[in-house]
Image (cartoon, rainbow, N blue to C red; front, side, top):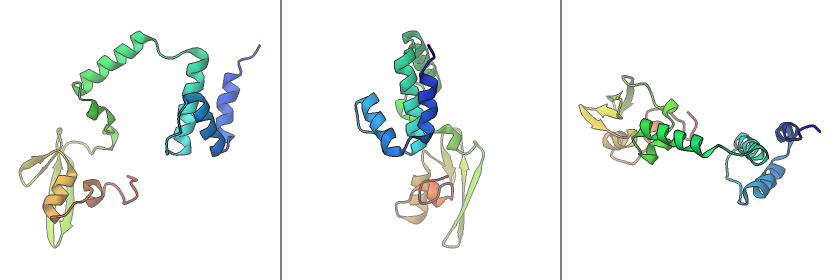
Amino acid sequence: MTDPIPARLAALKTTPTPDLKQQWRDLFDSEPPPFNRRYLESRLAYRIQELAYGGLKPETIRRLERLGEDLDGGDRHKRYIRTDRMPIAGTRLIREWQGVEHVVTVTKDGFEWQGRPYKSLSAIARGITGTRWNGWVFFGLKNQRGRT
């Protein structure tokens, strides 16, 4: 007997989005998240394989948790920050605001502006403009729609 799982996974690419969302409801017993189609496909593919072949072994889960704690010191918030989007330490971000050039240096722990350390670009943008800004947008690292 042939394994039906590879065919099911391949079919995800051509399945209409409403049907993907229904599969999500069936497989996860919850409403699908409001993410893009690619996200739904990848998570559904994983779930289908997990149910058919089994999930990660408990020892693997423990090991991954330990590795994560080694990387982030147990700070769960840091686990959700995409490090690949952070500029490399030493990068200088330059923004002119009302005729004044502002230079921000990316550090290993955050940012530096006018000789002071900051955890976020938004705090720096607020310091420059006096109003709330998304710091990534202010410095041109992300457009208004959230794309980098």
